[in-house]
Image (cartoon, rainbow, N blue to C red; front, side, top):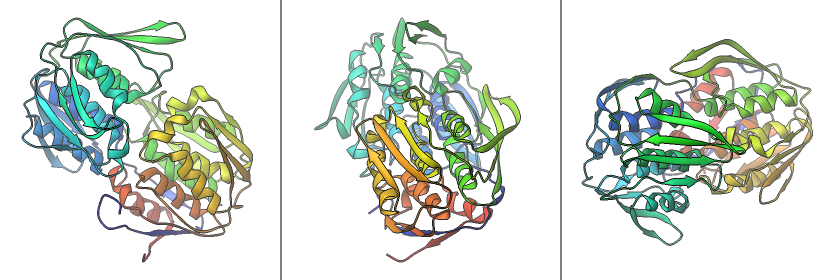
Length: 450
């Protein structure tokens, strides 16, 4: 079962040249944060380009449960009438965050320093994911947590009655942990300080400043500290959500490995903390160019043009790049299977605690398709034999993970024989138009019987 209804099997067939314009949805990370900070501001925040995948819709529903007025006016166009920092009301029911680790962890942070109680749950995949990395630092503010063994959902959070600001060093690179602490720090007096040894995506910091929070970032050792002044009055904003680079990765990578392809993906957010995949692809020899570079809503944006690239080589992807492309390793491994030589991906152990163990899921999926793979705890190696060399002809498990499902379908577009995925239902959580968008470019995706 997918956790989203009956399983939806799908088969990807070898494609002719892909061409056209791929209008991918809004950035999921920015969409979550826009709704949450809009709910914590005083007044009306207007949002255009909001991703309307299930993950973000679950966050919108959660903000309503905490007392904010969240309204969809037309597709992609939303408004949030916020209740102010510390103004969250106690929800009447359990907060169901579906498949979204980002949603549940950020929302936990946002309510942790308000004296209310909320219970969180999610689908089968989310209930397996560890929450201790967030609830442990939140407890330092004075928050109490009651959950299942191993720090898993369902979980009840009792917000701090008299929160205290904290100084916290993030033990592993995680934008979710950092963001949860900063959101909790909003309603704590004084200054909350977070130290990051490695930079992670900085959408929260950028957006906090946009909403009027006082936030300072300073170099410290090999990393940096983020200092947030607590108890601001956040000012409502007008937010234009850039298109999601993690979603753009799929049509981009498909174009690189399907012979004769030429695909334009416009308006993609190229925040430096998110653009590691595109840097890596260029190092491999991909014909990937940026056009019409610009800044929108404080985020760098460009149109990406990707063309079939027959001369891509396997490379070493350094561990320090992992935070800027952590969600893109599954689709990178598909490109690596169509490159020549070994691609060695280091510093990837965080993939083991995503919606699935993504290293094991992709290693298993590629292996049954005839690709040579090796995996260690923190390393994933794909032995590519050149363009069009993947035999395919297998059925792969998505493991309730949207990115695994999409990556293996893209693999099928360039394989000798079709590649089937047992359940593509989870794709709706982040990229609900994936199937139609890829078919418009020329992909043949067939819904198949179980």
